[in-house]
Image (cartoon, rainbow, N blue to C red; front, side):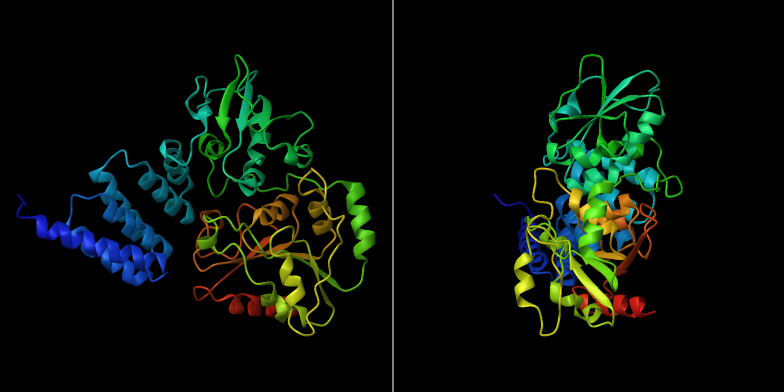
Length: 389
């Protein structure tokens, strides 16, 4: 027999369904009203304030988002993804101590399922002097490029470090340190060896905004640099460009790509040469450029082999500037110390923080953010003005 509260619960379900549809369609203000309204009708549900928090985060209202995540956590203390998403808000606001601490909750989320999380002898901050440490990767190539710098910090603390990584990235990662050993991506810890997830290192090493190890830490191969410098030549202002990030479903809402034709305001500047450093996805856009817009390409022998990023690293060091969305090559440019401009959506990933046009992770990087959601035109008008200046 229905309880007295059943009509409220049924209405909450209907509002929740409508809010989900608004969110999927990008109507975030309407979605937020629906989630908050449903939460008032069904205050026992942790999912409703959680979804409201996610919507507020997309809208750039991070303090309010954290308050919603706190409501969800109060109702369900082990709500791992709520802790995880709250960590993103803290990191966006520059609160690294609390943000990286909360980010440890990822290991309890279903999408983070590395079996090494649960093994014994996990490194939790004890002395590394004279110890052996396996660091294993998480997430994607850009994450490995951004956080591999911490393997060097662990080595400086006295550890003998093994860094697990995809084979295709070993050649690039060898430039980190001559004494860091590389292992297969799925390598287990050896007997007696400590182990640590790559993205736990900022937390365990006490990273703050002021203590980020921000000096360049990867290098391009000199022979490749010489080869691409000769091919690219000295003429003009050489602007390397990439425009297409991952096309995986998780990446599409993050706006990690922009249309190549959006670079037209820069292509029209006197003396500017746009040089494609794009690989794989998005190359079809080279055939549909606006009349008069030219983008040079480097041929089929540009990064064709089993080793990832080697020619890309060399070619971008031969350019005067590199422009990209939030992709793995954005992190590569920063790790190399290449002067780069990154085109970001209005609310970007936590790695770029909120409200800044610089990056404490990469001093050679400048950030250009959408002023209006989805508007890349304003981003590249601002870049063209900056390039002219």
